Length: 410
Image 1 (cartoon, helix red, strand yellow):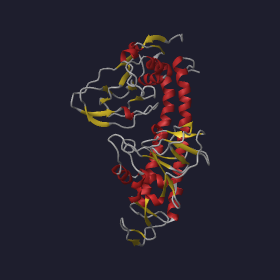
Image 2 (image 1 turned 30 degrees about the vertical axis):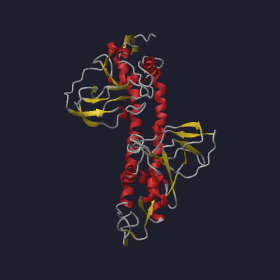
Image 3 (image 1 turned 180 degrees about the vertical axis):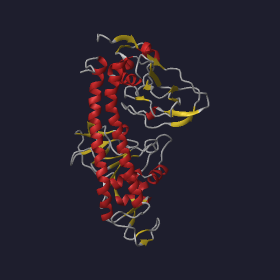
Image 4 (image 1 turned 60 degrees about the vertical axis):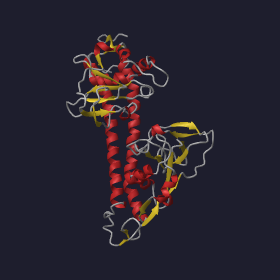
């Protein structure tokens, strides 16, 4: 393919593959695990401080991490490192290949988008080696890939176009994170700490309860009395419904954005809009996998993993109240302590919610809470829908820009 100033070159001649990075053995440094990478997501949202053992990948800001093992490579685990403290070298999984731009030859962010290119990924997948289930692509196979490299200014322009779309997606994610944190803060303030409620003022009278002193007129009830647990949902075997697998359940956000339509097999959780899904199996419960169901059309049902517990609100509660309870750390700790089964396959039985108590306010307070936080959750949905559209545009543009089918000047 000829683009005048584009050059056909081996990847190893224009990109550093597993570049030299130094961390003294035993030093505590930022560590990024494979779990920290989300499929087809540029940002890495967390790392932990961990002692460097002497083995594993080493990287710095502006490097790209490419998962080299199945199924992580096929699932799109590729990320751009930008969250480390300035000047600090991080370390991570031995199953990362680290890619970095060569100074004056290739742009770091362009390298990331090159690693996201379907042609690049197909090449990597086709060169995987090893036994079934543990196949991985060798770094030297990646190094021998032939690519068409634009001039550096055009690389930067391509990365800028694609990066602007990812920047907006990341901004939407952060906005949603803030909105959810606000909702959970209000829940704690009103229903746990019993702070004054705007428009209603401080609580004037109090009463004793099995938990503590609570506002007069409020009630202490079992979760099993306040929520429908695994409520009956009538769906037909063999008919297609929205399906949510465990991998689609978020660990730190309120909403599912990744689901498919599958025929109901006769086994699995069943849910509708307004329900809350809680992972009941280790380590998914400990990792925070919980979501609010708000992605179905009216009167439509969905289904999913047998390892979900489904909660539905009973009057006067609403789905946002139920979600905030399910996200509450004390509630989750109770569920974790109640797990049973063999090591590595422990799960929560629904009976444990017969002895977990929560405080319920009168309906006017619940409704006021719903009016405030419901608008925030609706905004989260708007943000997620926009991000899905932006990701579609990015993924359509990316291979065309990287192949030269669409030029930046056009």
